Image (cartoon, rainbow, N blue to C red; front, side, top):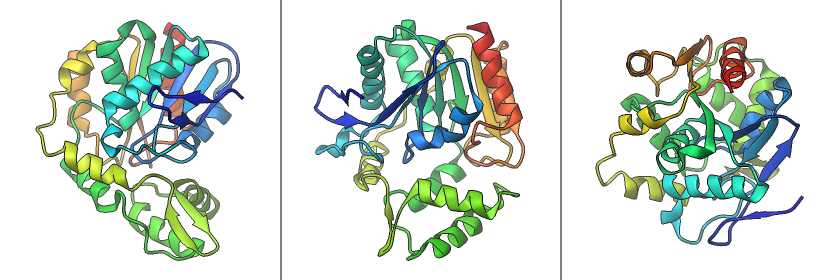
Amino acid sequence: MTPFVTADGLRLDYTDQGQGPAVLCLPGLTRDLRDFDELAAALSGVRLLRLTPRGRHGSDWAQDASSYNIAAESADSLAFLDFLGVEKAVVIGTSRGGLQAMVMAATAPERLAGVVLNDIGPELSADGLGRIMDYLGIAPRAQSLPELVAALRATMGAGFPGLSAEKWETLARRWFDVRDDGIGLTYDPKIRDAVIEQSATPAPDLWPFFDLLPAPLAVIRGANSDLLSVETVARMKARRPALISAEVPNRGHVPFLDEPQALAAIHAVLEQV
């Protein structure tokens, strides 16, 4: 597979599978293309493109941590479409990936055939942001896989009830670097520094960016999400009456996208495309 290299020389990990309309999957703040494993197994009839942002598992880390910002990551995503010769794609953006989609709508709207926002919107709840900062860039205390699984179930179990022991182990291995000699992060810890530095200035109003997102547009919310509130989704619907919305039970931040409710929303967007 030909490597994709950004304008500043970073090699980013990606997958390109299937045939059909192009669907670009962009993961969350600390996540990578493996977060769409469930979707890849459940969705057919599309060309599924998955990109891991700079500084995350499988992709090069940036020397300049300030490049860990949504504008730079959005530019990388657009360059990735250029690299593949894809003129237009449906973007499925999970969390920060959805914020990327909003920036892309402002900078290159002609490249978006439709958008699915996975548990993200123009307003982010303080509780969810605080939880993210509690762990961002900090190596886990767990020293073994069983300890890590136990810690995940203790902190996330209420938001994701009913997951099997096997699923928790799969997530632990996906989200962390599990080694015989301990547990590490799968991403550059300097992402924390970048987020703190960027938060020193007032956050932009994201509602105008949301208004620029093309139709068809969908939002998927985990029923137990602490980042995207019911009230924010209601405001999104009021501004965009044609918005396709789905709420996934027994999911916090974020749904896995293989749930029936999530797949129905994604298929609704694809059918309109």
